[in-house]
Length: 320
Image (tube, rainbow, N blue to C red; front, top):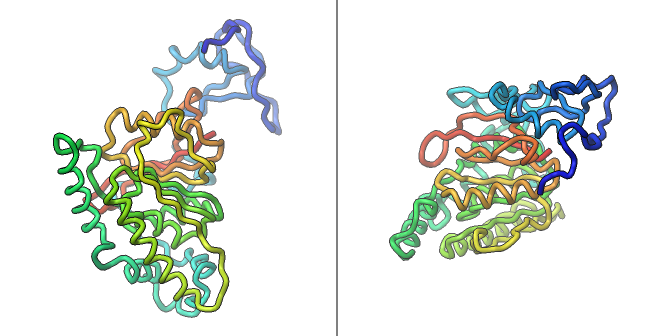
């Protein structure tokens, strides 16, 4: 829908909590205070959304994304991953208090705990991969590449969770597969609830099997303690066939392994993320959401991580 105001008649600017005078608007001929700025390069300023939109065609050829501020996110691009910082994972004991005394003795405690639950068939990522291949064989024409399977390694999930620190919120995984990524996320951070959406019924059933394992081991680890219980909801469905699809409740963190998502499927993911509330964090594997004032999404950083199939880039983005 087009704005009824012309570029020469700027709309009311979005209010900000500025502590110093705003710079002047970069729209040609306008010298009004400019509280808005380009979310991509962070260099150009505008007095209104109308002036920002009108100036975009001229500005986009010079718009270069600004690297994330270290104060916002300790997440920098590099060719090889760094070692996990297990010393900062002490919040794990909040969920498993009976293991607190052994945390300093076992630096790989999280990995050991995850493996103890999900390291045997039918709970391994390789088993989930076989389920995916079999399901694609049943699909008409053998299935599309969008149904391929691969996972973020649990060690990678632990490090990402430590970087973004979105505790006590709601986490979603679009294309949740066997649910292992959600379980790894909740093992390192005490989310309130976790939601997984998967297209293939066999993988969905495998996620429910893994949920039973999680509940059994959770009760054994907690013993007589009464820690907060994480609510898990796994759903089998196709978001491309759901009109006006919206995540309810709104996610605090959204995970999406989009490596083999086709154009239509990723377009649905893009719209879903644009409809999330400001402040939502997105962890996107190999494919970056569109950013800018139209989408309301900005990229905080990216880095190469090891996956179950090799190396891939993970983008950390945010709804603004």
